Image 1 (cartoon, rainbow, N blue to C red):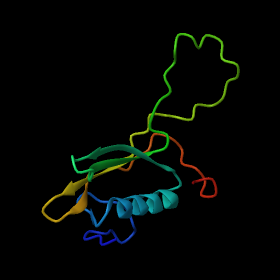
Image 2 (cartoon, rainbow, N blue to C red; image 1 turned 135 degrees about the horizontal axis):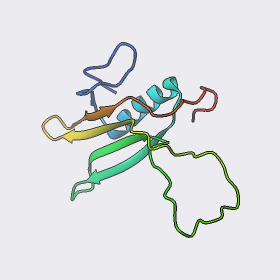
Image 3 (tube, one colour; image 1 turned 90 degrees about the vertical axis):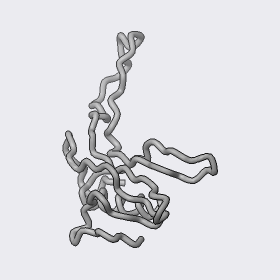
Length: 120
């Protein structure tokens, strides 16, 4: 992982560059573990040759479960797992350098973070 703009504390920054999509994922996962949340690989765009052109990594609590009309009487109730959290890191492939650059970044979460022992 050759990060040209690697923060001293390991926090992601806009404009950081990675040699591969996997390097970006490892970096964000390491940051997530340090901050006590789990990462989910979200959307992926590929070009006609099958090369990844962009990818979003999200907090595992990003989505909100929809309530369907048929869910009148749930069998059991439990605390909601998804909170609509907007924390994410989006990388985009720049063809000139053939490196992935952090294009969009949100570090704030809308929920309490896990304890380190529970983070995956």
